[in-house]
Image 1 (tube, rainbow, N blue to C red):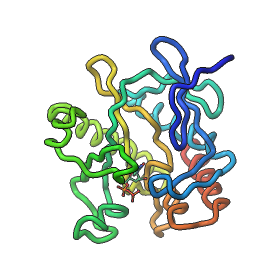
Image 2 (cartoon, rainbow, N blue to C red):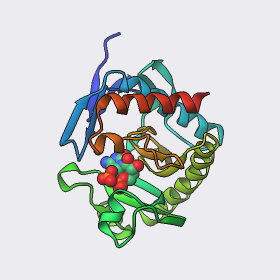
Image 3 (cartoon, rainbow, N blue to C red):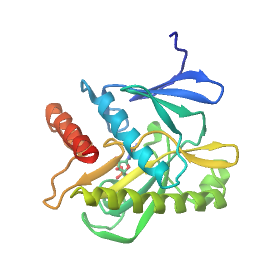
Image 4 (cartoon, rainbow, N blue to C red):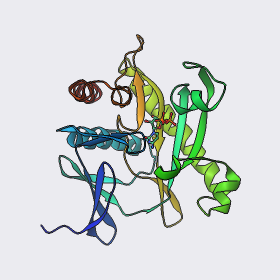
Length: 233
Ligand code: CDP
């Protein structure tokens, strides 16, 4: 089948499919630092496609709207065509990453209730933090939509956190991207170890922080594999 490329990002390619759907092909590339660090991790595309598909199905089974429809092949998802909003929405249960650099918060502090943050998707500006006023002014999201997204983030967190806990692991934080389908806000993009932080009780890291911190890419791959095996078993 001849595929028409619509767009290509750092780790995924979007192809035309039909009037209401596109294909999302997960590449083997792994990047960090707004794309400054980059490697090819053979098989990573399949792992992230499978991990994302698993979590999208889990969310759909609990009544959360996602773009997921099915798989075209092991690394290619059939998804609903959304009007994507260039905002990254992060929910944090435990402090790590950018928040401990930005604010007087210590690594490992527990957020009860969890903290939700919005960032502009803009590598050149290093994804700046947004508030409701910025989002309204930039015509990204109005306040009502932003609040709807916060509610979805809280629900998704309950589902993901308790599932991940049942596997003996801890969800530190995760990032989602949203799109519009008619007047509905729908989860798009991916839900994988590239977009969430997972550790165990001993503090062992399973996610892309391994790569961010300079671990050998064979170790990163083994960890992504182990995580997928663990969630599907
Ligand atoms: O990754 P970094 O420390 O720069 O940013 P963060 O704000 O601490 O990241 C919070 C969560 O969002 C982590 O699970 C990241 O993996 C995820 N994230 C992402 O998926 N894409 C980005 N561009 C930035 C963060």
